[in-house]
Image (cartoon, rainbow, N blue to C red; front, side, top):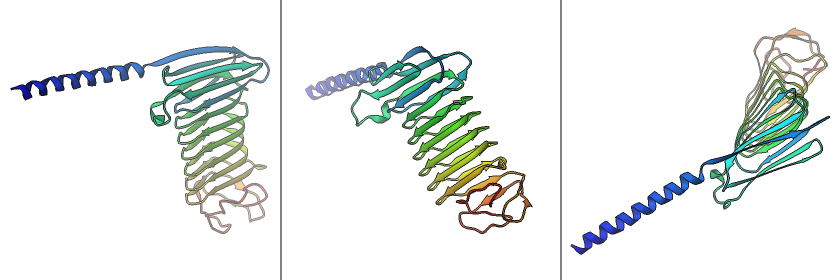
Amino acid sequence: MQPSIRSRQSLSVWGAGLFLFAASTATAAVPEHQERHFTVQGHPVVVLQNVVNGRIEVKSWKNSEVVVFSSAAKDKVAIDMEQVGDRIDIAATSTVASGQPHEVEANFQLTVPEHTELQLKTQTGLIYVEQVTGDMKLESIAGDVHLKEVSGYIIVKTTGGSFVCTLCSGKLEFTSISGSAQLLQPSFTNVNLMTTSGNILYDGDFLRTGIYTMKSGKGLVEVRFSTTIRSTCRPRRIPARWTIKRRSSCSPSSIPAATAINSRGC
């Protein structure tokens, strides 16, 4: 009978330990919310370095103030914010062992003046920017980058994350290893899209004086538009859907993906 008693006691203690571990884990996972307000003048610059995982969302308003709302586990992430003049620096770093990066996350929601310059970096979370007209540099390793109604000099870099830009204008540079790019109804004067294995979709018209370069090492480059290109090649009406192959001649159905497309060439 004694072995049975020992077995029950051991099982009871193990069960209690499991319950305590689950309870402590649940308590540690509760996120802490912070909200900070920064008054700015002139040309604001916001730099956000999210060294851990997490989403960054930026929207604009008419006020001369930057509002930062953050959400992160207090015992796993340290968030520092500092303002010097019109520049605001935000950093999120992990306070846990390096072997647990997947458990560390910090999410940010920013409200900024329309003409704010942005420098945003995260690991795996989505970067979303809407209606901001300042220059911006956006970097994500595995997260996607989505832009809507933005303008300026835009630089986007990802390793595996995809890029979607809707109703954007200005100048764009996009580089990625395996990420895809979609430009929907853009008004860019200069576009440079480079990806090693991702696909590229350009759905919109080309500006007469614009310069457009799109190249994918292994993926498909597709252009959809309806306009007349006047170039060194014979002018022709371009079909609504035009697939660009990686290697081809200047023909009605395809053009070289690595060639600048503007009013002077095909």
